[in-house]
Image (cartoon, rainbow, N blue to C red; front, side):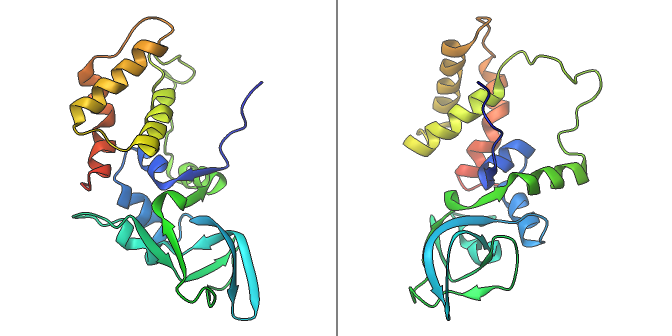
Length: 198
């Protein structure tokens, strides 16, 4: 049985996928090149109730994505737009808005596909297209995302590299495991983003 492709990506997943700083993904969303959505319980906006998947203006969420220094863990959502587009409407009840975490924010996969196609992102050369990768980096990234989400960051980058290497030891079909220096190069961006760097 095959698994359906992801319908949404988190902002963190896109930073990893595109090998860029988190704020580059946020910039694309601010410029209207990517929609950012969240799932919310029904709220009152003037005379209407709206809930489910709604668009979020990521510019309102910038305290969670500071370029320098620590970012906030959450921000208050005070205005939303329908998932398929429309005017921004203000949340009137609850009057204080909704607390949103960065992990609540998602980008629809078809927006990601369009963005990548327009910029030829992830395009592989003919010599590597179809080649079987030596190591299953995608599976390791998926495990790493879950590990950090469930348990948080370890105390040091070296500890994170060690855990990733142990994952390869447990899951390598060929018995081959990448060098720790190779793993470090692959996850250094993730470490820097999560530690509040660029």
